[in-house]
Image (cartoon, rainbow, N blue to C red):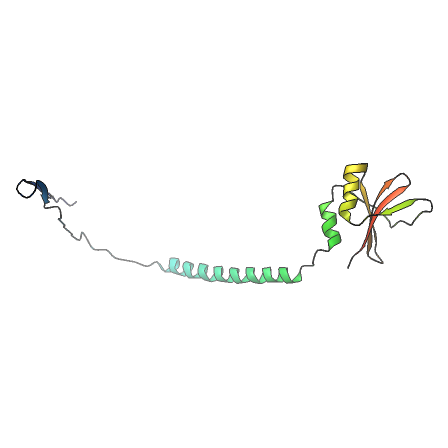
Amino acid sequence: MIAESFKPIMTAKLAFRDGNKLLFEGLNSEKSRTVGEYVVTEVAWVKNARYISYASSAFLAVALAYALRLYLVNRSPISPVQKAMRKHRDIIVESTKFGKERVGRTVIEVKSIEDLAKISEDLLLKPIIHEEDPETRQHVFYILDGDVRYEYRVKEG
């Protein structure tokens, strides 16, 4: 235990003759002293663990960058047909086979899948049926309304 007293002294003087000023003296005092002796000791396993963590962090960062590059280079681009199907998936119904045209049915071709979705949601309140011909990679989206067939055809690729 260290028992030491430190009593700084500050004096205040009233200087009426120097223009009615207050003067403070003795504000700065400093006393420094070293108590004891400090020894720095390195623990070898902590130092080694630190270096191993640096190396493994660098290796993992390089591996992550390489994996991200492989993913970005090798991913397949999303076709416009797939984008349209994702956008309107709540009103598109998949068909099991590619249908053939029937005689006597009125076929109205629309310009885009958005127009077909507009007809489905706003006018008819019927689902959009999707068919795909795997040989020609042609997609047909259509709505049946009695003898009228509203359709949009698109070829992928």
